[in-house]
Structures are given as C-alpha cells and as structure tokens.
Length: 103
Image (tube, rainbow, N blue to C red; front, side, top):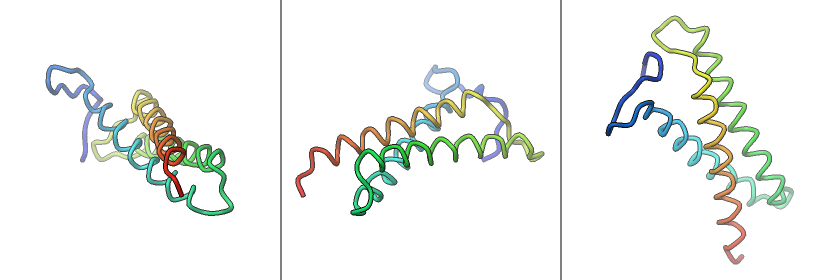
C-alpha cells in the first residue's frame, strides 16, 4: 500500500508502521528458519544465520527499491532497522522452538 514518510499514528503510538514491519519480518523469518532447519544439510546455527541474513537483505533491498520508485513509496532507515530486528527475533524464535521440539 503506498504511504508517505513513517508518520503513521495508531493507538496513540507514533510510527506504528514499524510494528508492522517488525511483525511481518519476524513471522516470515520464523517460517524460513523452520523450513531450513528441516533439511539435513542445515544445522540450526546455519539455518539461523541464513534466515537472518536473507530477511535483513530482503528488507534493505525493498527499502532501497522504494527509494527509486516514484509511486508514493518512501525510503526509511527506520523501516530497515525494524525489518532487520524482526528478522533477528523471528529467527531466534524459530531456533528456540526447534530446540525444544523433540524429533
């Protein structure tokens, strides 16, 4: 959805869109971690680093893509940070989930 600078105010919280960025990347990288950890060639550590790296690079690339678009999208460093932090937390959650699960 096109948007302007991240000045969204919801529930009295400024920049609430960062919660959305964080949440989407956390869920996405959690699922990526679970998928990668299921392969015999991927250790949990490799699945963790790969999912964090993939999530972070994707978040940064999409933000830079918005920088060059002229259709109402905006580039924000804070969105990149929220994406990367979401990727880190989502992958860490997957690591913890997979560690506790008995196979």
